[in-house]
Length: 273
Image (tube, rainbow, N blue to C red; front, side):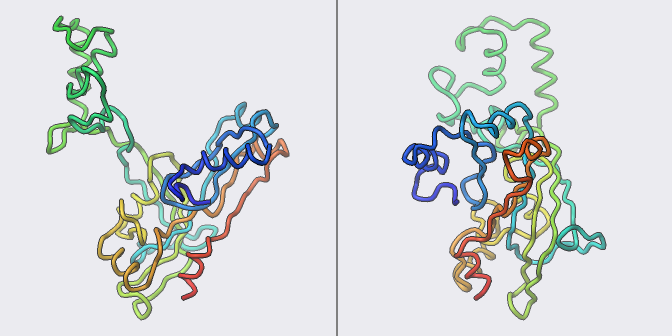
């Protein structure tokens, strides 16, 4: 499955398909972001698998196949598929959190709160006061706000940045296309995120100097132009090829311990050519 294909969210498409086939309502257990293709794990509501996954909440281990520019740093340690490199660079969380909101962004505030400083919004939400109230906060609230403002980094535009979160991605090299095939070389890798930070696989690969080919959000413009215009890469080359479910889920017998999904046709054809 490819998230976002056809302009409709993948979850909605599958829910409509399940209703058409009279399978019943579905519960998304392991989703994907908009760009990668690959495995998306659903459970039928009321099924044994849905019950087990709700009783034992855990994050399945996902493995992504990606084509990246260049070569990963050398490593003598070998993993399951090849030489393994671990990237531990902390990352800021992405999304619609208050700390990452842009000043004046109407999508992040409504009514009288639009355009209100983020720290004031947080203080109003905590104290229960109206936005327009000019009553001075208590000494404890003022001290707590001062501590948070001192800790949070400030960008060049003045808005508060979310703090960096611990992140770990294990990356193994499957194959290297040398300079005789691709200028600057390219590597086919398997990346396994060990933490849950938004887009951490693509961001960690960029941090290592090996951006994902075709990645318009976190990739490299020259790399994308070369692989799209010269080699004909039709889309971003990242695919969730394997999901390893938690032991408690597999022990119930309602789900295989490992689920696999081969590369889609357009990515296989690109590699073959």
